[in-house]
Image (cartoon, helix red, strand yellow):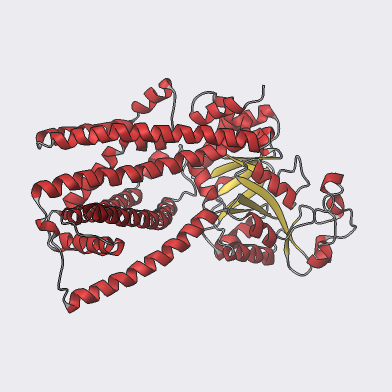
Length: 566
């Protein structure tokens, strides 16, 4: 009977943890992102760079947002701890607990703690501090990656690392002073076992990942693809380990507290009054809404979060120029497919309207260069255009490739790669409206950036949807272009970009994207001066060059060494 109850409670606790972690990630990531964007707008930045980071961190708006985020996290951790304590209490009573019972019981108890004006606020922040402290090694691992000795020393000497180490020492002293030495050593023993187990899982999975990619993917793209996959692998496993460890630590501590101090604060609730039944019904309604929204947000993140995750891990992004046009016909499905295979963060595509108003991928107004047809794109309907061959003029291998519609590109590649959409019809408001509506229809606002050589078009984009990222295309650097408020970044020919240009843009919260960079020396120069995005015809080659610039500094670069061609 006891084992059955224990297994049932463990299943309920696992279900509860899976649900609230999924809900937290689905809600909190977008919410924190919106708060971050709001702070940037208040301060007047489009992006945060090392040049403007200090001013941004010191702004009152950001400090208030941090306080709010920490408070929300503290309440969430307290809610989670209440659920774990409830599970331990029910196990001691040999009473089986359901997932819903854990959820509602934890909600009621958390609310009651604040309602009774107990030390709930202090306890919430203590729980949050506990969760951060016990996962400190993993958090450092996620933030900074696995580095060599010299890199590790530099990290330890950083102010943030020093603060975290002080917090860790404070926790150890607190455990010793309050006479909870057995708990501390119990946590230490479990931490060692957990970290050893997780290290084995992490490196075993990494070796398996390398073996699979090397045997399945062509050698020309295996290195760049591994680097891209590794970033996600590292982050996902880190977050998973933190979540699992937190639950194990909480369960261990809750068991000690409940068994040592009793369960007076966690009495079973029987004989609910009408008012309490009404509250329970309301909670069920909230629960169902959260489940539905969580599922929707999770699907949206999987479809729309690819580029965001890449930008969070890799500051320097690689964009495939008109798809991987160095090896496939430009602005075709084949070129975009190759860009995805070669691990590009974005694909740059040129968009024009046909005679019947369909946005299609085409750089030139005239069709002759890519299709050998003596007509302009605005003179033919999409149905006519669909019959033209956009690949045979490139090579016989790609005969039959068509000029794709933007809708079809979104349908096939949405969520697989980011899109840098260049509006080719200057001063065409219909094109702006059509493209932005299509982006919103497919929910790809976070995966798309819109660029144009016409500044008025960027203004129109912001009027329709302020959240869309925009880039002003400049053939050369001149005038006070930095002050262009409707542009979040500037797309400039690499020959006109210097370190001073990059620093000036960064100080104003703007990014610099450069085109079209294919030579090794120019790729290295662009990375050295700190540009944010390199547009190239050969994304796999470009990523290999920029990653090899700082050899053997991170595990990701060791992967490059392992996969480099002899």
